[in-house]
Amino acid sequence: MTRIVNRGVFITGTDTGVGKTVVAAALIKSLVRQGLRVAVMKPVAAGAYMTASGPRNADALALAQAANVAAPYEQVNPYCFAAPIAPHIAARDASVVVDIELLRQRFDELARDADCVVVEGAGGWLTPISDCASMADVAAALALPVVLVVGLKLGCLNHAFLTAGALAARGVSLAGWIGNSIDPAFERAADNIAALEKRLQPAAAIVPYASQAPEALELPPAAALALMASPLVR
Image: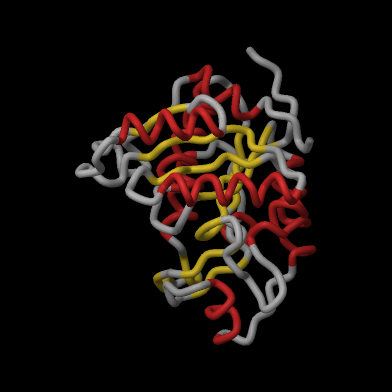
């Protein structure tokens, strides 16, 4: 089995609604199938339903279902807000300040029992989580390379290149990118993918439009391990 050289990856996207959870679950399932102990984390989630045990976010639950390292929900998803709105607004409405140090502690707890931890952000790379911090600050605190989910639609080139530039400016490693075919009517998709590969790197995978549920997809083993073997930082 290929040796894992880092303790996890941070999944971000070119926008909200581009299928980060679909890709994260596919990566998790592939790693589990290869015998790795995989824990998961959704540090901040906005959009939840109430249960007897408290609010639960569907994306966080999908990640936990794909993983094979069990953990309390509060460890997997430390900040869970009910309203499906921007996280910093949801936190403000709930009179909560997202503590990045607490997120780092929860990640370290998960990492102690796992070979790797797959962490999914909220929204895109610079989505605010407070008045002065963003998801980029969370990824930096966890010291993880980033997997970029590119929603293949009109405008994806600009979104992808802006995100890649922001990663480089922060000194964060791009472990790889995965194209997610979220728009079945997207014209010249192949040409757009070629442009992405020219400016970034070859895609780790291209997810077909038919595979838009977390349980419907699993990444090829070589692609999954290659993403996990990325250097932490440049």
